[in-house]
Length: 325
Length: 315
Image 1 (tube, rainbow over the protein chains, first blue to last red):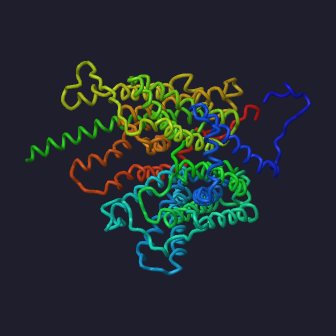
Image 2 (cartoon, chains in turn cyan, red):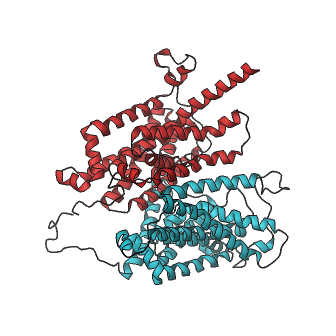
């Protein structure tokens, strides 16, 4: 900060816009840095970094099944991170995606269980819609509390997350428990019509991944090319300027939270109607929280998030399967 | 029969009061730590992760060294190290405090899982209860006033010291000045960044101690996810207490009591789904937060003006 110490003639100034290179470069740098720190930590723990790197980043890609597993983790992370980033750009801090995912999964699961004999092609789309609405509603509670009573959304979204988890526990041990399931805390299996189809034969990757890609496209268009997205970004970067320009803060809060809630709700549907196939106590290995990191690693930019999430999914995928880390 | 019932009620009541004091302590430590950081103008949202790290490291060291003292020390230092990383990000790199807090908090949860993994399901000897002046066996008030463990008393002492410090000492005033008007504090010549570093690190020490108390004394058992949102409740408590130590302590006590309702209601033989009771502290937090935040003038009067804002020395 001291001027004229080392570079007497150079004066550094903040640039008004990050360059195109910076947007991508920062994400890449962050990913590389996180990789390097991870390897250092492993070295400190006495594991061979090269072997772990192999286990994390090379071995999964040597088999089709491994690639499928990574895609399986990538779908929800990508979708949730894109939704959260919309809010974060507007300084709306939704940290309750985990709960919104759970509520979305519950709603979709309840629908699947009440139509368990149906083989209609509309069942799955209906589940996606219901799940999205449930996730959005859960987030909207926080939006309402913030807009109406000024309650801090960081705290309320987190608390709502914990409430959602207890709601799930209650439902799978009570009303939605499989009557013929020997008292295990889980629901009956969904019918085939309520499950996503396999995307790549021979793997567990399913078509819900396409929802993540669609979410990315929508987020990109919304943030980079729409007036609403622009307003949102302005209210995040310069709240006063946004107020002066008439971009309502309440609107940013509503949009920011509902975007995150919707995406998380859909991701929840992707889990229960994908690899899990029923409701149970554990629906997510923490996608809702990991997505926060992915969103930041990606610099809150839709393209950056795509770069970052593949990194996150690789790590998650490996960790979930082997318990490494 | 009536008498029998009376004794049971009394036992239950004693159980609630005693259990609540134990459950209050981790919340109180964490919330007072957050208070100090926030009074200096830094919003540290990594409390949950710092508590989790303190809990895991404290448990590991207690197990290995058979010493609760070392466990608390290690837990506190581990959390303080995390808080220094947070302070680096927000005070030196000028990162957004919310984002940095969330990131460090998640890091803390990861560290906690990593450190705690070999100890999953293990137990340690609980922290011994004191017998002050030999009065712990006096019926009713004895165990409450004279028979707690050392950290319960430390928490109360800390509360008194911090309340006094903020109100009556120069150090307290300097910290408040840094949190209210950092530019003015800088112009008078106070090292704003240095003071904030100190406050954040102190907050980390307390959060780590609270976490270590949770794992080595309150449950005396390690499972991942032990902290279970207490760090976030501590952050909320600072708002509920409108940045005033005594009010925060009262809030912590009330929340501890609510979190124990599950056990005591079962003790009374009522049937309410346990999941509802588990969710109750979170629901209450949301409701209280909405009620308190509604009065924006009241909040603005008490909230440190510079809280959460990036401060540049040359700005």
